[in-house]
Image 1 (cartoon, rainbow, N blue to C red):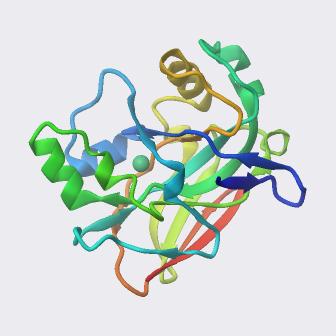
Image 2: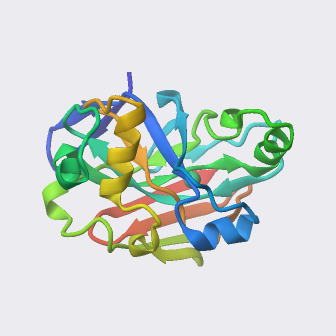
Length: 218
Ligand code: MG
């Protein structure tokens, strides 16, 4: 059982699904040389992929190319299906800072063979996640600065206003495929600047108004 917490409260949520959006920032699609997707690219990480703030990332030995992807995380606080965009944000309990760690070599290999690439995305510790800030403390989730430093150097920098799908559109679209349940977490995609992490690296992700996340690589 994996729990997440609303910061500075005793409010906790048992994590259900972790649903991730791929290719939601144009500059990241370009840097990977991917084609523009005509519908949302959605995949899931298992709850066993979660890593708490301050934790240690363990890169699996079957990969030589683990990448960081800094992302705004949404915590679902109210169950819904076919959620309308205008009501979408009322389904959220909070916002957090997440990393969608990706074994890029394994992902590329699986993609080239036309196979699902979740083994590149769902390994243990592949989802470092901060505590959540209450949803009503964020004025606009679609206008937040994101920054990731590795060993003190800026690697990723962007703003959620560069997302091709807004938080509302993401919630509405995902809820057409899956019932969103209390405790589900949504990762909203990453801006450009993804890159390799290696043993001993220290990662610090920050999102304006939301908070920060610090993890290290074993
Ligand atoms: Mg991602």
